[in-house]
Length: 551
Image (cartoon, rainbow, N blue to C red):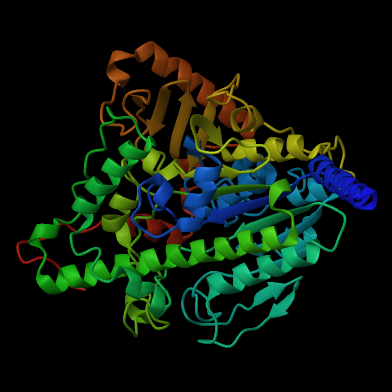
């Protein structure tokens, strides 16, 4: 009896010690990034798409109603990885070199990556997925602090061809080609499997890890596995207008948007579902079925990551953050990137090259205005989920008003990582963002900052200060003003009634632009690649005529 009591006591003490040791150990950090995912495209933000694993993270963690990105891929990734405004990091326009330091198209050395800082503070640093911030053989993941990396190029989910179906672009594993046989893999699964492998390997080590899990899904081309597509057969036969209404109602029920929210006004060139023929409706519905299957498969992958975390015993000491790089897209592959030429098979298959287009993205960005590449809420708003079982109270929904520049200071504060004053003989740029921890761990509703948030991308500009948002849409130079406290759908332009406020905020914008390296986009237009000019044109749909339209 006495021996049994002693054994029980020892086991209790060991268990208590192990629990305290895990809690005292620096936490693991997993940053999950989706690509071209709209604000309402997961269940926890109003979607009908099956995303049980993301919904679980949301229900056991915290969601933010307001979290911002940079409206398009490479600039968002530059800010996400460095904590800098994208111009300060060298990616002010896109992954193209426009001849100025702020627009060189790849990360500069003055902007330290999350991997460089965390590795310098004892973390193992890991990447699985899309990169898109390198150029001129510089700033690849293995050059910017990542111990291990699988870099998967986008362009197809079933083969390693480029966007135009020409030369092969093999994935890179730790800087070396990682060829895969066309038609024998699905990119989302490859990215997931590598992440799961990393987590399993890290369980054997006595040090924390940072994992950047960057899915290409659900970015076009619309490619998905048959078993996933089958789940959504017939679910989108009602069209985008009805889908938007359904999602908006669910968002209000969830508390993601307020009951008095007015959704944005429908664009003139969004097609009228009722005027499409039966065949046309079927073709459009199939696109959304495939898109949903892509989101579904990504969520399945996140479920496997969660399973491995639990199996490794790391789940209670891991922060997971999930976001999207921009709003849902408006570009049409039928008009851009040789999409019409490349299409050689049904949508969803290896031979297809389609996008969901702005018609379905109109529903994906519910209840906001506009799309990817725009500075209206539909272009820069992202779902935000944070999960940390031992730190974040379950079921929280807060306003937040966070930005991707806030993630670096958040991770550094959480990990106790010192941001260096000097790194490899270089003086790093100061961090402009604010830690999200008071919002995530305490009862603070919004991020407290002394300066507004700013945006610029290819002449599109915006400022967010408190409840006010200033917007200018290229090529116009005029400012629009919206009160997002009661009009996040941006339906009422109040600029004419608030000249002084518009003047004050515009002065702050130009001060920020000067300090950050932003230049008037008209001075760069001649250097803009033709493909990106065509990208903007592809966002404009021809109005539907009396007999509908053809594919």
